[in-house]
Length: 158
Ligand code: FES
Image (cartoon, rainbow, N blue to C red; front, side, top):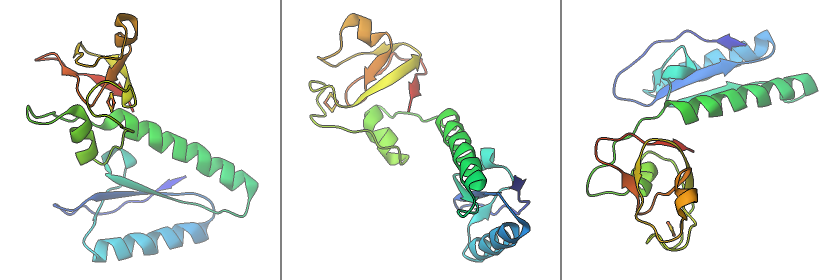
């Protein structure tokens, strides 16, 4: 796996690149990064600092496909672990997540159907739904209506 060195510009989405496979893929990755830089995107050398990560790999060889799947899973884990959002008083967790590009399935948006249930990994929640049992509330939250208890940070399993 090659993580390409690159430059950073301010004010644009930060793009990271993971180039897998042969040297030809690395050349293709460098060309893509060059094009993105010319289009004004900020480039970062480590996926941890990126808003978006491109995984460039070969699709012809089974071992390369398997390696790609593993790296994509790693990038998804990184994405899940890295975001911290502040929920303004006039917005729901659901709206704040949507604003950050994180989609959660919804239906009623009133805390009565259970569709927007998300795993709650940490923090104390102010549950305002009408569907979860007390036991379910220990590990879940309905993000359309419920919030963090003031001063608390919630850790969601997204
Ligand atoms: S969308 Fe129905 S409970 Fe949240």
